[in-house]
Length: 112
Length: 111
Image (cartoon, rainbow over all chains, first blue to last red; front, side):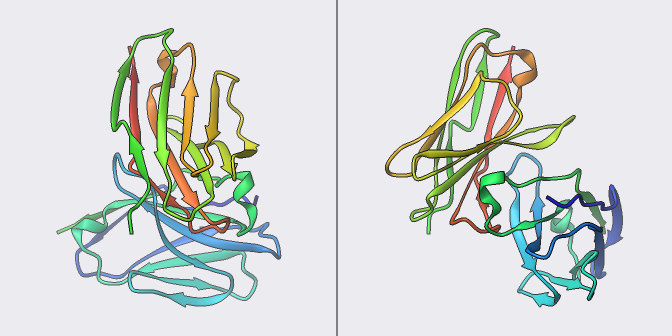
């Protein structure tokens, strides 16, 4: 599984757009990029997944450049409730048997 | 659609005891994975079951075991509990891809 690097923490304010970048220099051809969100004492929640270019859903966008060595999770107009830890994972979507490898994640703090 | 249900939500055990945690996956999901989360080590993969068979196991001692039933419900067992086993134990179910759904976890405290 490709190793990922993301900032340990980030701060922002309500109403701002937040971009969290993840580096994955040794991503493999079959690997997808997936982001999870976790609140204290709860299980991680799937946010978004992508392979290349841009993916958008009702909560976030995921930007992946052509070389796929990094990706950026974009959260539009954040609110206090977006304060959480965000994890970037890289791996083969059929790789459930290997388990999900979570790094330290990015602790996002949203202030009023 | 019901989510992943883990029971109990909280548990306090004494060193040396054993504990069994339960996970009911989303209906139709045949893959169930277990994770341990601690402040120091973060989220770590324990093992995964698919159609009652353990497909893979993380780097945990043999005191940690699990099983899956024909209805996809899963249990994990920890024997001879140690203080370091205090953690949030999370179960996730899925269909084989990366969009796994996690339960709220069982908070185990070993005293």
